[in-house]
Every structure is written in C-alpha cells, then in structure tokens.
Length: 405
Image 1: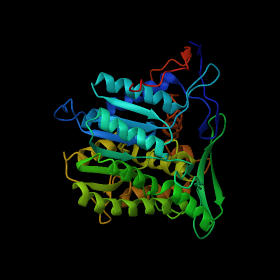
Image 2: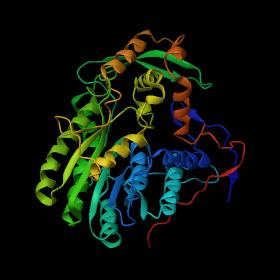
Image 3: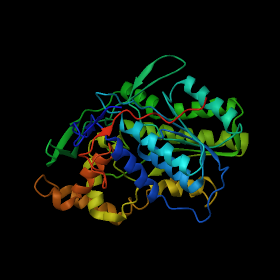
Image 4: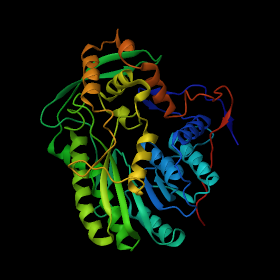
C-alpha cells in the first residue's frame, strides 16, 4: 500500500485538491465525541433510517448524531471518489470509512452506498436493502443533498444550479484568503439570474428528487407506520439574503418547503407520517464556502458568538430527538423545524451587522474569528485537526466500507 506525506493541502481559494486520511478520521471521531449521549442507551434494534448526503456537512452530522443519540441503523448514501497512488480520495470518502468504523464499534448495522442519489438505479438498490436487510420498513429519511447538477432519470435532461440574485445584480462583501492565508475583505458583483437559471437551480436543489425518493420507497411499500422525513435547509441573515434566500438557491429552498407541505399531507394519509424541512444554523461546510458573502458572515458570527455558536452535531441531535419522539416536533408557522434560533436573535444579528459594515482588510482580524474560520475550512478536508501528525506518511488508498453481499 502506497504511503506518502501530505503535510499541507493544495487549494484554489476554498476548494481543496487534497484531503488527509488521518485528519478526516480524527475529525469524524471528534464529531462523534461531541454528540450528546442519550439519557438511556438506545436499543440494538433501533429505528431504520436512510441519510441521503451522509458524507459531508449537515448530512454527516445527521449520520453521526443518528447513530449515537438515536441508535439508528440503515443506509447512508453519498457520492465520493477513491484515492490512488497519485491522488488522495475525496474527504467524504475518508469520512465515510471512519463513520462506518464507529458504527461497527457501536454495534449499529449501517451500510454506505457510493453513487448518484439522483438516479433511479440507486433508489432501487436502497429499496432492495431496506426490504432484504432491514425488515422491509423504513422509519426515517434525512435528505441533505447539495449538488451542482442533476440529471432527471425520466427525461435524461441535465440541470445545472447557479448562485445568483433574482431581479437585479447584487453587490456583497465577501472574505477571501491568499495562498499564505492572509485575509482580504472585498466586494463582489453578481449578475442577476435568468428565468432559465432559476428553473435549473430549482430542478437541482428543490424538492423534486426528495419527492422522488419518497415516491419510490412508498411504491415498494417500505414506509413504516409513523414514518418521518426531513430535508435540511437554511434561511440565514438579511446580510446574505440577496445572493441566498432571495436568490436562486432561495427559490430552490422555497420549492423544497412547498414539497414538504405536499409530502406531509400525503404521508399523513398514507402511514400517519410527517414531512418537514429542518432549518439549520450557519456552519462552515464545503457547499456554504462557495456562496459569496457566507465566509465573511460566518467569520463575523463566530466573532460575536465565540463558543456559543452551535455546531452541526448539536443541532442534528436536537432534530433526531424531535423525529424520534424524544421531544415533540417544534414547528414554526410554515411547518418548519427551526434549529437556527440562536443565530437569528435580534441582538446577534445587530452585532454581526455592525461588524459587517465596519469590516475592512485592515481590521477584519479584530472583528471576525479568522483563526477558527480558516481552521474550519482546512478541517473539512482533514487538515489542521488537533492530534494529527502531518509529518507522518499516510496511506491514501482506503477501502470503502464493506457492502453487503
């Protein structure tokens, strides 16, 4: 097995070309430890769950929190690339291997499938697993997919999502780092989306694929009585709304919420079930760092809140408590679970807005927690993780968790 030293990442802005196997493993272990243990250990035959988008961001947090706090067993779905003698695997590949190991140690039967979640072939593979390995009934489904494009299985049409405002061009402040890690605050202008841009983004990031998953599983008779499903979402601050909530992604999120209402009614009639969107708070994820303005906003938010910023594992632990009935569903007027209250209080938003207006390249280190933010971006790929020896050689070819025969 080929080993090599990966002491520093190659990157283009917030896009990293390498990941570190040992760092990803340690990161997953740290996240696992951060999940609050339940008051009563969950039974060995816990609820059967499907997590779509299980290898990164809030989907990874949902998987780890579900395993440890809710005692789930079931299936995680993601789309990752393996390593080779020349290149590392994607960070999600290594994170999945580490998650599978923790699941085994906890005695949880968790299968991880690597493939296109938008395809009907993978939906059928998952349905077969539920039928043959997990008793034929699914209790929960978490949908957490952030993708740049989607091919419709019925038509073969490929749609591409864009990050653009709707109606007029927007100017927003954003934060970038140079190759040496020096920060710069600058303003970026983004042209408005066309109607076609909006439609394509909704086709990728809206509720169409989530609904298709539910239709497929229901058509096979695999939804348990009381089945619940949650699609993970975000609303965010007025500071970023032009490019996010009022932009193309926001249109897709609105479609996702409309889909939740449709599914909720259908599932209630079909199996006494529920469908909700879960509005999570801000976090540094591989998808969020691509959105103009989000890096500056999250860095300033951390500067205001410090350690009071609620990590994804804590938020998803709360979601699992609500989905499993440990606590009642706490919904807003639109029928959404809200896990972002800590972020959107008037006091917090006023403090972040004041810093947003004052932020310059010269003073940003005083207003935002740059060390934390820069470290969080690196940790997404397994770098800057405490306790990891980056001078030691590591094997880049890590096996995918064993799939069922």
